[in-house]
Length: 458
Image (cartoon, rainbow, N blue to C red; front, side, top):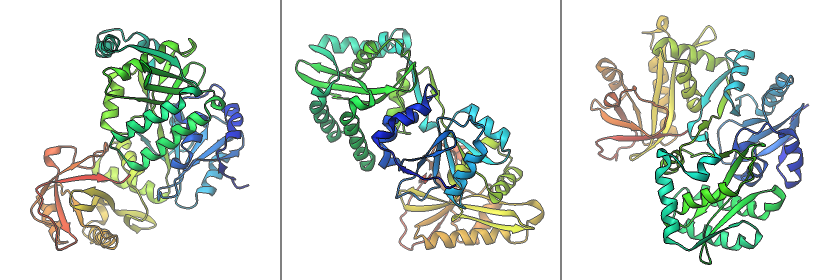
């Protein structure tokens, strides 16, 4: 029986809560989030055995379909569920989302070599003790305490529980905030849609919120809903930053007015944004709630893992992370002997100051098949693919001088450029000073640059 997916609707809330009960672990389990961000993440749901399956894939995405088994994988029907997911996903495979460390260990036990695992740091939720926000006591939170005291000394303020009478002012504040915030326009537009939905369905979702005023002007608001019986999730927090200390102030006031059963506060993800990460860390989280992924491994992918470890001796966790993020069958070039992969080259699309660059990575040949021209074949094939995709250049980092001279045969420059990667997965040598790239320019009018900065597409 095939899975039948449908859009998430308001009337589905009771079914989701019935399945979630008190098993909620991360912000992605909260129905309000699933509903309000449904277009951005392409959220749909289907029933399967004793679980709900959430499928996430936006219309513009070319990545594998992603599934969350809701609320967890601890069910005797897991084999049947995975079979159904596999049939829905198709031949290219799929990714399981929002797994705990315990769930990953269970999958590894049940399906050795069946999945590649990744721990997405930018998706980790920040978990805090509610009492820490209520007092900001201790040396580590002294700066927050000082900001709150400064706010209290500067402004005539009052706090109110958020209700529908505040919603127009909230939207006006949101508009003002957007005018002064530079960020990804698509994400900001979807965030505004999500916030409007939170407000439109405030009572239906059972949300709680707070509003902070200076005299009669709304200067901050926040809202959220429970993840479980003891953890409250903050979905939205917006403030007028012209008021000194306004963010710690709204955070503290809301924590002080939370029902006492919520001993912990989840402030969701940092999305890899440096400023947001610094802000969330500055509140001294109790811990990060990890969200691991599991990518289904086919025979080729298992062969590449084996080959990679044999040639480069990298740790399994690192190999899994790289291949989970960057393995794309359209851009992985292999040669096989006796039905298994013996040579491989990954082409990873990157954005850079010189345009779109194809980065060649993980070039490897099984020892007994070396000196037969297999590496040259996959390299030429990767370069041809980069040309077909209208990339501006192809780059790689030779391990030594001999390899640098070898790559010159393919048109790569003898002169090496320092290269820096912005992704949290290090695609270089592991030593910044050794990250020197040889470049093959694919257009004649290429710019003169002294270094490269590469942001890999994930």
